[in-house]
Image (cartoon, rainbow over all chains, first blue to last red; front, side):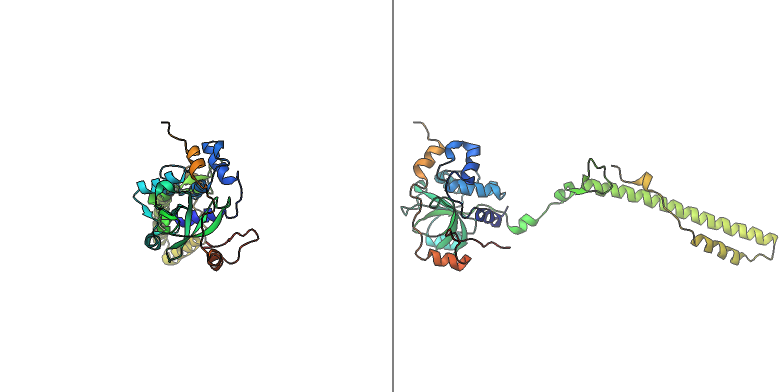
Length: 264
Length: 49
């Protein structure tokens, strides 16, 4: 939801010619066939705003085909700048919605046309992308003599867009290899919780096995001591060493999967 | 007095003079930003990440 995505969406329509076209069809699908062959500059900006995920920033009062209402939306947000060269130089950002009055006034009521600022040329002029300029979508260069004004939608910065909340991470879906095929994706939070439970179970079983091994070692030592008491020829240390060596060569399989897998 | 619909307002007040004056150096500026236009006169490109 950034200005860059707004402009990327607009660039996709460069070269679109005539009407009805995909922009007027998109608008007409929601507002009626009367818009199929209507002037489509504002419909283009509406489509770019919606298509780029910027509807809340670009269309604060909803879809717009009428340029005057579109400009008023920005003024109502307190974001309107009259189209003076000084304002354009200082405040017209890429992604700004720019309005034109071919009569040369800055009067919102007299606005004829609308586009999106792509580049602030730095000399009081902008380069725009416009729908329905000569019934086509093209890049244009415009100056303050025809710019009635503009407003900068409250786009997210790229940094803000990259920020993901902890809640988003927790509720995000991930594929789980051991899941039921009918439901292969689980919420990440569920996976983490289940794995925590599973690890605690495994840890308890490992502790139990370690205790069992310690008890067996003590038993072996006691048996060796008993044998030595009956037969002085028995070397206790050597016997224990042999037994431990035999145990070390045994592969122990920790078979906990069937009982302790995270629940599906 | 009945308020006009958006469609009526668009028909009466939007792009009634479609082209609008552009700058004398428009083609030079666009060519400097994006290179030469395609066969349809459209300056494409730009915005590469």
